[in-house]
Length: 149
Image 1: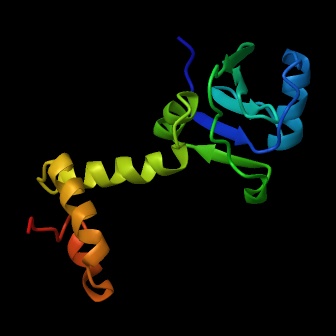
Image 2: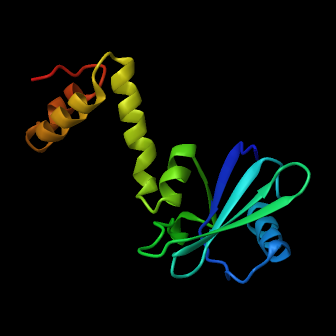
C-alpha cells in the first residue's frame, strides 16, 4: 500500500499525454519539489481526466483517472497555482463530487456526534430552520448550542 501523508492539487491543467518525467517536472515547477509520501493531482482542460503523481519515498507512481460522464469539480486558478486537500476532499474529488464542501459537512457531522446529537437529525433540523432563523440567533444552530425545536 502506498502511504500518502499530504495531498496537493494543481489548479492549472496539464496535458494528459504527459508521462512520469513531464508530470514530475510540473510538480517541481508548481510545488517546489516532490516530497516523499505526498500526492500531487492534475487535471486536463476539460476536467474529465486526472493524473496523480505520488512519491513513495523510493520511486514515483503516476496514476490516471477518467470520468466517462461529467467533470471533476476542480479548483479555480484564481485561488493560486496550488492548494492542499483533506482525505475527505480527495475522496469526493475522485468520485466527481463537490469536494470543496466535503470538509465543512464532515466537520458539522463530527461536531454533532461530539455534542451527543444524531448527525442526520441535527443536519435535517438545521437545514429546515436555517431559512427563517434570525441572524442575531444563528449561533443557536451550532452543534454545541443546538436544541431540537
